[in-house]
Amino acid sequence: MGKYFADIHASHESQFQNLPHGLSNTDEILACRAKPQTYETLLELADALCWQLRFREAIDALTQAIALEPERMEAYRKRGPKYLDTLQFEQALTDYTRCEQADGVSVMSRYRIGMAHYLMGKYGDAICAFSDSLAIAPQDDDMYIADVYWLVLSQLRAGKADAAQKTLRQHYRPDMYVGHHTAYEKAMRVAAGFASMEDMLAELDAEPDDLQFAMTAYGLCVLLEAHGEAEKADALREKLLKHDGFWFCFSYLAAYHDQTKKRA
Image (cartoon, rainbow, N blue to C red):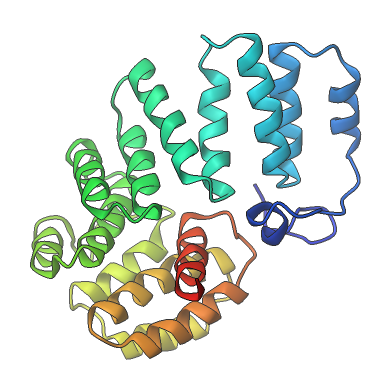
């Protein structure tokens, strides 16, 4: 999935708040809708809709596919992440759990279940899921730092600062392999004391990529909150939410949901 462009992709407001997106159907969407509705063609339609970030309509197509063949798992595998992308966390957790029961426990199944729990504010359950994922993730896999990041944030949100530091001592190194999760590592570098908050915030100001900005900034927001600097955390979160080029990434979803809860 490429970066969000307003003329061809649905906005986060349309997907989070179920508002009209104002987009025209692509040729691929029109072609899919012209076919007889079978399990396979409904999955094709969902994929075409997802390209435009029209996740709510994709959910509808996947739900229709499930109604046709409820024992097949592919539609559940596709629908769970789209529920998460539209802030429907309980539904996402239901699909993730069903898929794990069918497919078996894996690094990714535990990680996704952990994300659903985190976004629901169930930090104890998130800690368990991310701990499970971390325990089976290879240390040279870029999923490892993602597990460390979300486990530490879950522990901090649960008021377990000592446990978070223990996680960092056991599982974080500044020279660890991180693959495409470099931005997660930057936040953990601050959490582990290998970089200062001030230096990382200055580095973040020069970050041109919205995805990388969101991933690092969200971790720093939670760290600031844990250190009693709520105003700085709020200001950084406001800045993060303006970097909406990848609004469907986990860190943006978490920041948006945090902001929504604060305003409620």
